[in-house]
Amino acid sequence: MKRVPVVGLLTSFALSIVPSSAPAQSGVGPVSGLPLPRFVSLKADKVLIRNGPNKNQDVKWVYQRAGLPVEVTAEFENWRRVRDAEGADGWVYHSLLSGRRTGLVIAKQKDQLVPLRDKPDGNSAVVAQLQPGVLGTVKRCADHWCRFQGKGFDGYIAQEHLWGVYPNETVE
Image (tube, rainbow, N blue to C red; front, side):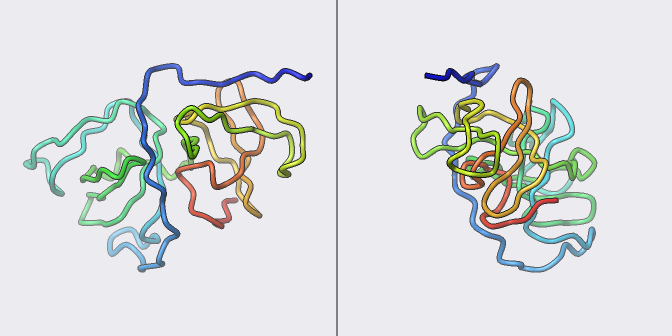
């Protein structure tokens, strides 16, 4: 039997993922001209999420994980309303967001390992088993598979196992 590495979280991180629905193509942002909704990632290890789109609004929470994917659902001046994998939303200053595509591994059951394969094919060799909540970079997605890289892993994951890309979305 061939052994493959199990890639887990480096920090404890509880996560109950809320599946993301396909974008309704509700339009483009009035400020950026980019599609709404859309996925982006956090630039910094410390990102304040506020109740409203200005610095006078109370801070709801602080993200402490650079690269975390979030979904932009609205724009107001230099502020973006974002939603995270758990469904929580709030406002963040636009300069704290990056267009770099990242993803979080999701599974139907929290202890289920997700196979990372050497080719975009369900019958190809498994190169690693990823735990839910593992963060990586989405290099590209096509035909229900995404090239997914991170510290200690590189391969293909079924698109349904990533939060940070829409079902059937093509990422180049």
